[in-house]
Image 1 (cartoon, one colour):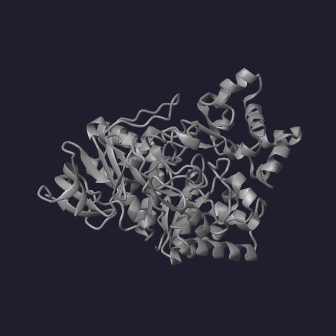
Image 2: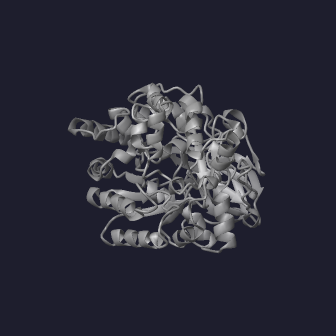
Image 3: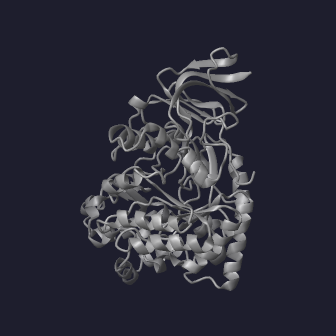
Length: 529
């Protein structure tokens, strides 16, 4: 018997096919029928006339690895139709582990009480499976974690023995459930990697039919070098390639986005399986410590804090010709806002404002705040309007562009209530649908749904998610398209969007009649399982 029957909805199946008025039958966590089911018996019948019924959204790029171990509710995601996310991005994953204490200090979003008790990637997934999860979770193995497990915080190239151990860890992680390898080439330790090192590791990924997702080395002045490196690695390694949050940043020449897309087309014409994704807004966010030179981070957070106390070394830190944001080189501290910090007095304010309040120079203010944060220095986050609307539109009109959040799965209640993962973390999917699809009409709604459902599923390599068809997992979003509204702001980013009525995860209601339920039916999805 059908357990849940959604009647008379405008069904968009996720493939890009035209919408149809149909019913969707669900039983035992699966879609069992789509069509005219008006005469079918069902335990629960829900009339969704006038509403749009789609596959649950798949967020192809998140950093929820650690936060879900503290609280798996993921309200910020499921309240906007997201039912599955892929964590472990930008080279950051919570496994494999060399030194457990180092990993605890290094990981994005770790909260007190979350302790590393595993070594392997499979062990991390086991720990995640023991949590109650509001959505399905997949994970990449991060190059930074692999390098850190072998080299710790040493600033040096890996030798042959190191590289052999790194390839073994990548292979083991994929065999234990990782969906691919992620790299963060603007972050320590990824910025120390060479193309030959990346190619060697990506060959292991290709052999196992995984994929490589990369935060490339540069997206401003030398944007072409950064993108071409990853395309070259993909070509030589023969690995499926996904360029993460592709939009170039402040400081890029005007032609950068067009040229980048031309490079992708050329790479595809020569046989590379490559696609990309964007964050659907102009705000860029990153760790405050990302502006520091690599040598300042060597030896871990304790050594960083020692150097921050040394006036001579502090002066050297500020003479960094290639910080992650060129806003720093241009002294545009008025455009950079603090987003996450232990000090609540600075949140939402610009660096320029905080510096004026403290009576210190902006760069010194930043270094002072890192020092004051102590062991949490690497967890400080800031944001700036570094992306460009015209670049986003150029990307979104292409069929090879996905949409993602680059954020954390959070809840306004519980231990994550005070955290912000990104400015649009509570409403990225809603903003995409409202601004770029409904208002700007960059694509039909059916194509927009494909970008956040079957497109990411195909890029990741998972077959039974991202589509509404018999046999697929019953991850379903039901919303009033005309009312979908992004509500977040710089002053108050923790606002759920309007318009989402029901969300089912594995056939159970995570959201019903616009309210979050107590159902947490998410699963850990392992590659090869």
